[in-house]
Length: 206
Image (tube, rainbow, N blue to C red; front, side, top):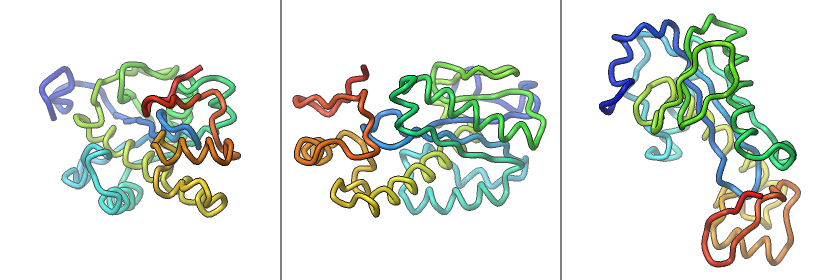
């Protein structure tokens, strides 16, 4: 863990920690997916890392171990329809809140730690940690579950709409994805409140 407020979680009385993170805030299509995880003390923490620094194979293997050995875990996806209705930030917060609620229904949680700089509305103590997916094992695990589940959904989308190439770009605003939208029009899972800029790869929200 990096130096900072949460460098030594074991020395701080946070009680039972649930970590939460999301995947899919940046894409132009598909859902935003959140994971929430409570890990046991004897978890093989060496398998965890920032999900973005792991290969797909490493994430898939880690996800299977997390699901097998976690005290409790959950993943929740919020559809492109809801994203368009309430905006991506609120949809991300909603996904993390629902994932936490599923975990909290199975195990008592004292503290929720989330990646980023905002906390979802939950009835327990919550701390947002910038780069938490590089610092806190529970957040790393949640990030891995969120990423693998969202990728699974986008592979299914690719099978249904292969012309959009979702298995390659997972809905992110790549040059290829933008060109396909321009050629074919929005797919059935496109986020219609995201507009694609021609001059760069940055999605504009609202």
